[in-house]
Length: 150
Image (cartoon, rainbow, N blue to C red; front, side, top):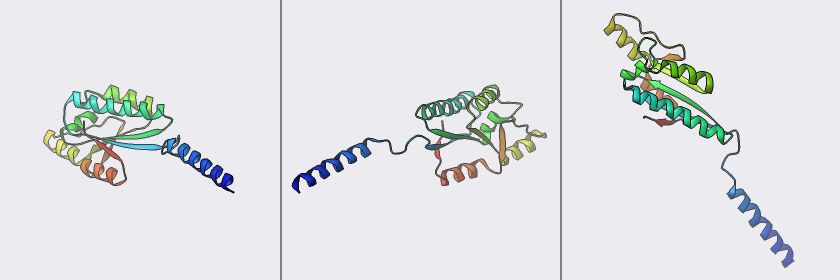
């Protein structure tokens, strides 16, 4: 009886050690990252794109996936404007290569820019207009997305 209990004890300890040593989630885990761009600064825009690229590479290297949404508002909207974006070529290439990126343009900022400039504000084809960039960031965080502002 004592031998049986001792053997069961060691089996349980071994199973516990194996379970603790395993990653919390196996392959297929999904990660979510919201990146906030609110400055008309090419360096910050490129840092945001670098963050998206390297986070994607890291998780895919682990057999996991990640969704990344870059939300631009205020002066940062220039990142997603067809006529003024200093990074539109890079965005187009990354969108094709990675397939996990979304770009959200603040509708409030677009209306303000349209009024100030007296013309429509054209977006790059990869961007989608949302009502409010700040509200979009709040919604993503409420859904459990991680937030980064480069």
